[in-house]
Length: 225
Length: 230
Image (cartoon, rainbow over the protein chains, first blue to last red):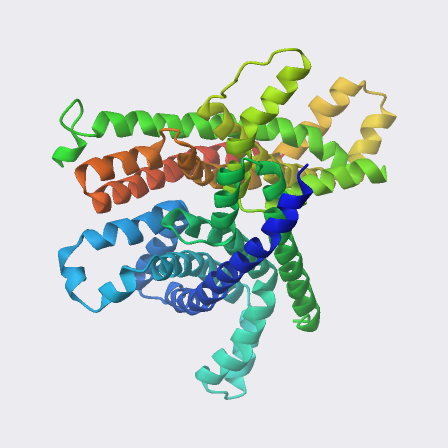
């Protein structure tokens, strides 16, 4: 056991954790909007729109995240036309490619979580709202959304943790996130166990915090429905 | 489409064998995962505090740490650990472990943590009376477990196990970093030599979609078969 290496690598890994957290937070925020959008599309009565939203979530949930990152980072650059548009400014950066892939991926999972949350709302609440003459926009924002948030919190907490682990794939497109730096240290020192313990410890600490925050929120919003 | 021709002209046969490799790794990993689950589920349910915390540590650590990090641990540390064990028995030559074994083992450990949780949940939701009745009727341990508890556990576990299968199947793409030629690695090689990454990675996505779709069809059948009432 090489304690010295563990102590020396800790600040480097902690520094890389910042990139991991940045990737995680940006893609979660974007993913939440994408997820909400597609969840609303899924609840649409139009079959075509419904199928489209279902197809989106099926494709992104049925393929590995690694394939998605590779298609966006290596694949899209191949299209000549894209290189001439302003999109290329974004797509040539591995950081933004990773964020696009992560947001689309978590968006697909989030849309499923939110859809099932919306669908489990008892029709009685909506009927009560309607019979009280509340406009449907307000029913949506003041009744459906708060209940859906409460219903989806446990599943969404799991999704945040899955996404935290997902950000480790950013290291495959040359980003030096926590896993990327850990791999670099392992391949230069050949001390996998020590580095794994430090990097894994940091990841576990983050999962622990996320888990407890979600638990706290569940308690706070745990009103009876 | 020429890119997918079989033989020397295209990558069809290579991708076909790579798909078989992905299936083989997933199944091996799933089986290794079941072995781990069989070891750790009793620990998680144990009333002994030490055994219980060993079981909890396994599932918490593996499910809280990125898969890629676990793979790097076994990829870089695997042969070192085996050589260390071998040196105790007086064997000091360099041992290199096969990429297939390292890959299936690391994915297996990950899949095992999920399976453990599934089995624990299933066992806990079996009605207590079933255990008591089996004991009271004086069945021996074999019948107690294999004829009474296991069938009830399976019907509760199978829907969740098919989720674990999906996760395992998708995780195998990560072994490509160790150089094992499965779908992802083969697409990487093909994309590099033809300079057509968009086509090959999209094709890889289609292959994975096909695998998840087909396996879901099979698993759904299994699910209806086992969810029949008694």
